[in-house]
Length: 313
Image 1 (spheres, rainbow, N blue to C red):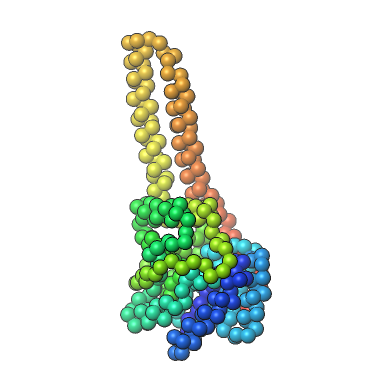
Image 2: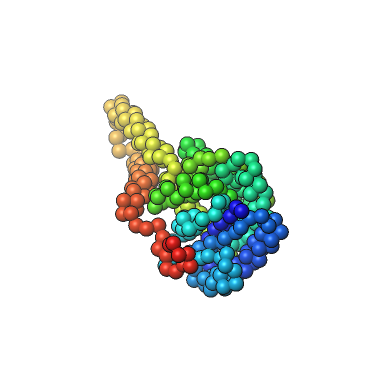
């Protein structure tokens, strides 16, 4: 009998967890009489009673396993911990807020089992319920990163996907500290099919992804899978050197022909500010790549486990 490992990253999901578990059990009992399950809840340093809720589920259901971090390491670390702990034939990543509909899981399983796919991913075709500015920047991000990177990023793609053990092993083998899983899923390749669905709002609690956290995450994705920003800095530098050279010729010619070399001081100050701003912007881009290198070479653990009921961890 096949076994599916359900990995659930949790950060302050005290209200959502009972609802998630109830819905997952309903789907399992209705659609998966021929499949074994295990639930791996990863508590990412929650500050509420998330861990207590997980332990209550564990006490009444032997399928429930948990990993609790020593602090908040982020969703990427939580997903990696779950993938490393999973021992199912097929592994799925889900959020506890039920924005990833469990009802799709049977269709995903049938496709991956019967049609030779290695991964069945999901993507939202709408962003209903999101602030308009957040949706706008999300679309812009996917357009930019697909132009910059050789790895295709699917607009609206969720972390919710069902994968074979072979694909999961490939993802786990990528030990980089700065992780951007959507890019890693694409990087390892494998045959993937996408299922589309309408956006679903959270069943309880509040989103942990503010605009600035999403912006930071987008920068992580760009720097992890593209060196185009560095090339852009070089191109801008060359262009401004050429413009400066031409302007020097123009200024010298004007001074020799008409005199009055001190005119245009305000415009000169504006140009200095512009060029200085571009230099600082370029240094910031270089600094982002340098900081990623710095974090990688320190080789710190991606996460630290405080408590778990999985013996092998």
